[in-house]
Image (cartoon, rainbow, N blue to C red; front, side, top):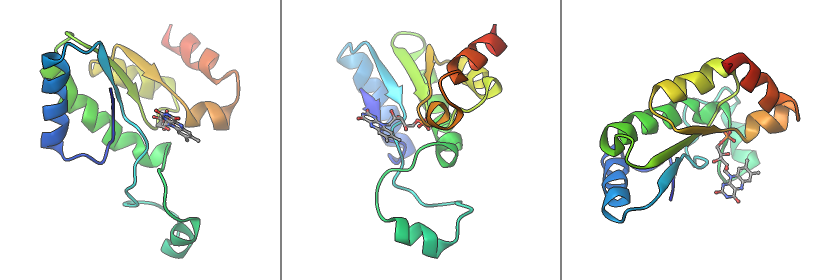
Length: 125
Ligand SMILES: Cc1cc2nc3c(=O)[nH]c(=O)nc-3n(C[C@H](O)[C@H](O)[C@H](O)COP(=O)(O)O)c2cc1C
């Protein structure tokens, strides 16, 4: 099951409980966000870009927060794939430290190119 970062904290916890109840293999957290909070770009520019999900840096903090909500409930009983704004090895390590089984990068890969995953893996090693 993949989780939206825009869910309320209590709903994230409810989803985690449901994952255990339904004996799902795991969760991917998170998808892109519909939030426009805390962006550096001028509001006019943001509005012109239109609706849709944001990925990458604006998602980083909330994605980590969601992981902090999921891990205490799942406690290793379900796989957690953490994704959202991971660009550096330190950020990937922080997700592992916070209980992620695996980490995923999408936007980091797009902007940093095909060797990005190798750089992250080597730094983690
Ligand atoms: C262009 C684009 C297309 C995406 N398509 C999908 C999709 O088809 N299914 C899905 O579950 N997530 C999709 N995502 C969400 C990503 O898998 C990921 O959860 C999200 O972008 C946050 O990670 P990131 O900050 O590393 O990009 C897409 C993201 C982007 C930017």
